[in-house]
Image 1: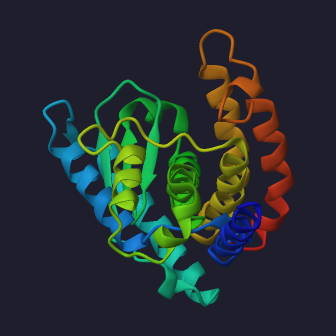
Image 2: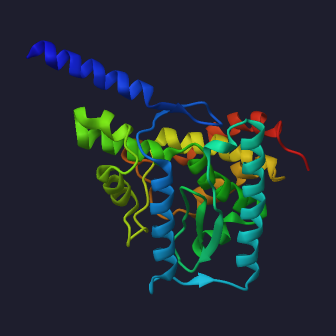
Length: 267
């Protein structure tokens, strides 16, 4: 029995290693056990249900709504160009959508496949188009770095244990769909993924590069996060209690990323 367990463990570990992939921008390794086409389909469904919900008011015809679509399209074009230059465009299937949503919440997010929502509550803090590009570039970077794939894969690995190899080779596995639905809350997509602090910093780095390629000054990202820090009411929780890095750490890291991003910036 012990020998069988040892062989099973070796097989499981080997399968997980084979199922690892490398992100396009930062080169981080992540677990990839889900069918990305399924993930995109589920995200598109959640996005559609979110937009059509009676609790959601999509803003159209205003200068801010137009700005969201303009900046989004600029970031999308830069993203597509970046992926083509890296020779990995065939590994992505973005069907971009950008919408401004009425909400006092200071928030924005991007689902797999390029489904983006910006909440009106964050617009005053963005300050200008470059500030908005900081936000949208960061959220889109989560999709470029495939943090959702890693999150869903980690959940599946925990759920199925020794059966994880079977999940990795299946394109219609019910557990994969279940994990995706749990992560994105089909019917309740406001409960978006909580990315880790390392994911957040990786998205900051990738987002700076993408916004720079789109023609926005990466230095504006620091100014945005300084405004964000000032806008927060009350005392922020200790960093170790949050999935997000502290503002001070984030700003410090952004400053260290800017020289790399400036190589892609052309006015």
